[in-house]
Image (cartoon, rainbow, N blue to C red; front, side):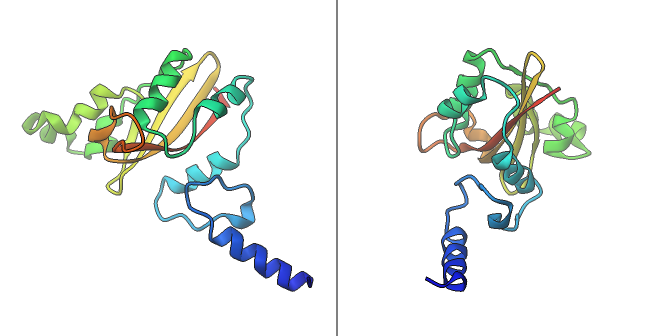
Length: 165
């Protein structure tokens, strides 16, 4: 097979991969369509700097229910990292007025202390810590489905990475 034909074939195979598979090469990364997706692509490329990442990789996978993901982390001793700007990031600058009028708008920040932001297109950004390790994860779906478990959950894990604090 000629080199040009092989390169074209490889490009076709990489371009046809589903978005939920991890990206193994910068050349195969698809252009992101939301502000959080670049972090997701970087997360999938990044190798962890902590020893327990191998165990977590076995237990966590893109597409799993956020409630299942959260349950695994809490069982493993990870703690939610609270973001003091959660309500502003989720509801908007006028969150105080909006949450006073409709408290359910700010309920996600109360229910999920790890929630940092949530975009209108359904991307959530969360943080957990354990010792000197910081885990950042993205999820996709409806926030109201955060506690649903199983394959049909309304909020599902997209990707995650671990770094040192």
